[in-house]
Length: 207
Ligand SMILES: [Zn+2]
Image (cartoon, rainbow, N blue to C red; front, side, top):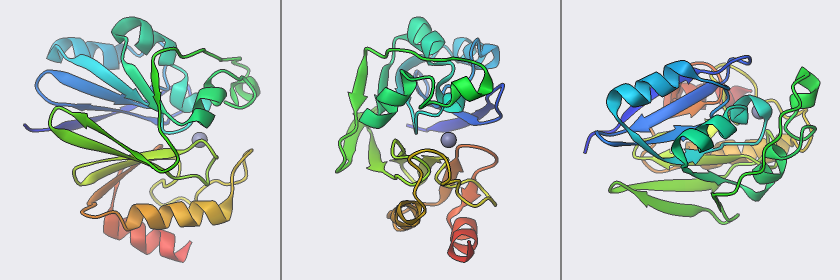
């Protein structure tokens, strides 16, 4: 079955929210916008059932809309145990520094174990990897030839590792993990345009 990927820009911070979908069901990655009308309208127009919501990491600009998504679609959320803590903590998720004070207690979720995890969805394998470095909460998800990496890799930008729980060495290791995944073609970062594996290799091997 054919799989589609659509990118939505979050606000107030311009991070990426992705919708992965086939004819009838969908996955949301990084719901960083409250009252995300464009996303809701698109889902309604296509008549999609949102089964999962993946959180690449717990920074506020990637989870700000989670409460709306849960109340509208009741998806199962997939995240690291660290991200679960971040979502519920205004300091860890950095919202307090934006003057937002966002926190939310998730209830229906799957914690990705450190050794990684596979979830079968509509005949596809969603492969999850811990890819710490930007924060200790970061995971990535591979599906087919695509991988969603959150803020570990952003096209043309050095990975931010200066925020709490960031670690440069860990980020380098995680980038290696991503670049060595079998069959990867396109890498979708947490901000900006996606990049090809080649573009990522060229950039991150030099930076
Ligand atoms: Zn971040």
